[in-house]
Image (cartoon, rainbow, N blue to C red; front, top):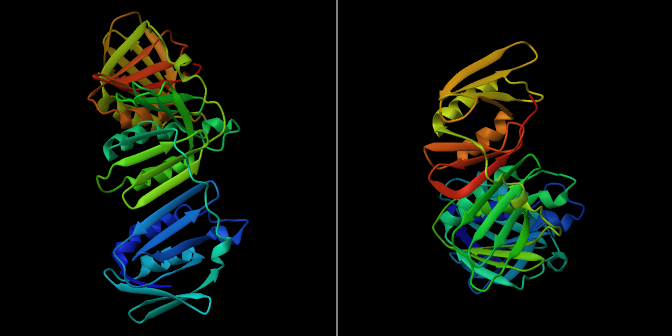
Amino acid sequence: MKFEIDRETLLRPLQLVAGVVERHQTLPILSNMHLQVSGGGLTLRATDLNEELVARVDAVGGVEDGQVTMSAQKLATIWRSLPEGAPVSLEVENQFAVLKSGRSRFSLATLPVDDFPKVEEVEGEVEFTLSSAEAMDMIDRVSFAMAQQDVRYFLNGMLLEVTAEHVRTVSTDGHRLCQYTLGKGVAGVERFQAIVPRKVVLELRRLLDDGEDELQLSISDKGIRVTRGMFSLTSKLIDGKFPDYERVIPRDPKLSLSGDRETFSRVLQRSRILASDRAPCVKLTVEGEQMTVVANNPEGEEAKDIVAVDYEGEAVQLAFNPDYLLDVTRVLGTERVRLSTVEASSSALIEAVGDESALYVVMPMRI
């Protein structure tokens, strides 16, 4: 096997594919990347048995068909350290992968190609296409609320729901819930749900960082395949039932206030400085057309700010984790934000005024 290519052409595909590899593996072969030269192009492949990322690069020269596996992290690190614009060649010699660039030469150990596993192909039951901008919104608006290593394994990912009317993403960690709806569906689909693992969601977001290529998605009961440009990402799904998120959304809230999103966000940032680190909390006292935001900590320190709001009703005091509110204000895309609730002790519904595509539910804290 042999190929030649310049550093920049392969740098991003190499780094993205290597990102799938876990640093600590029980099987040595899973620390390796599979490289194959065929048809005048180079294919890179890495997997952790649950997820597989493949990249196909055609801008290669000096090719000699063949395949090899070698350490993904070592290869990516060496490649990144090479001078910008440097030409690079790689070929297999006596069971070693030899990389050459200028006066530099690296010999990397290889493992048998036959030992390299491959994730099972996905036979799609639901197939559709998203633009890069649509896909980024669907991830960015909800991904921050995915749980991490929760014993309720079905929360450690993002729900992808497809109907004839919409494509929707939902995430929750049990303390807050995020929902984003794209107002276009897939004809003939009644309601299809899939829980995409957290790691796969983050890897998919990395694929969207450049270019305008569309995403082709193919989903079955057990797996998902996403293709974009030179990349193809295949993964198993989380086997479980996602909570009935619609039951969590407050209906017919009696209390509702709105205000400038940027102002509210800045006040929360300042208040967070003096909130308790162990159990951060901000108290929102709303009376008339102003909201007083107060945070304090066990050392007796206190932060107090007043924000102008639109509100009609009796005075009310609410309390929330400021980090949860800040996460929401960062992803809302309009100038004004609305916060609604049935009563002070109930969950709050947060929305962008003038944008119905996203909604957020945050659990209250006891005052």
